[in-house]
Length: 251
Image (cartoon, rainbow, N blue to C red; front, side):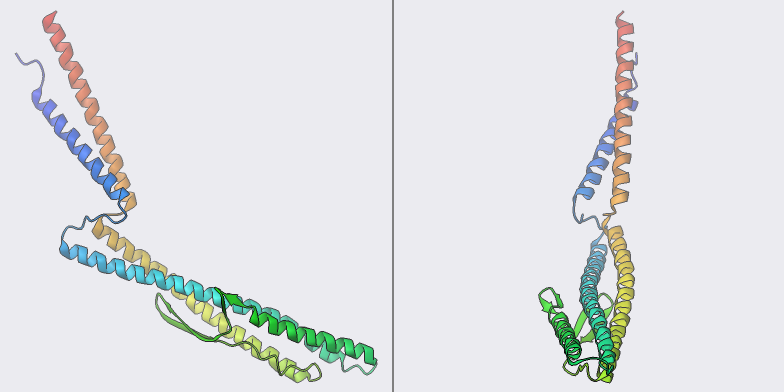
C-alpha cells in the first residue's frame, strides 16, 4: 500500500536545494566587489579591457572637475578685479573735475592706489589646492583628451588713475581673459558630460560580462527566496499529508 508520493517529495527536495544554491550565488555576487562570473577567458579579457577604459575615463573626469575648479576661482577673481577697475575708471573721470581741491584729489589718488593693491592681492590669493591659479600654461588630461589654458595674472603695474585709457585697456584685457576662461569651461563641461555617458556604458558592458549588475542580482536573490519558501511550504504540506494518512491507517 502506498502511503505517500515519494517522487513528489524527492522533486521538492531537489527544487529546494536548487533554490538554496541560487540564493547563495546571488548573495555571493551582491557581496563581491567584482565577481568573477565571465563565461570564458575571452569574456574576462574583454571585461578587464572595458574596466580599464572606464577607470581611465573616470580619472579623466576627476581631472576635468579640477580644471573647472581652477577656472572658476580664476574667473571669480577676475570678476572682482573688473569691479575694482570700473571703480578706478570712475575715479579717473572724477579727477577731470577742475573744481576739486588738492585734498580731494589726494583722497582719490589714495583710493586708486588701494584699489590697485587689492587687485594685486586678489591674484596672489587665488589658490587651488595650494597652487596659484594664475601660474601660466596648464594642461589637464581629461576623459576625452587634453584641455589646455593659459592663465596669467592681469598686469596692474600699468594702471594709472591719471590715464583713463590705461584703465579702459586693462578692463578690456581682463574681459578677454574671462571670455577665454568661459569658453574653456564650456568645452570641458561638455566633455565631462560625454565622458560620463561613455563611462556608464562601459561599466554596463563590463557588468554584463561579469554578471555584477546589482539590480539583476537582487532580483535573482528575491526569486530564489520565493522558490525556497515555496518548496518549504510544499514539503511541509506533504509531511502533514503523510502524517494524516499514517494516523488514519493506525486508527
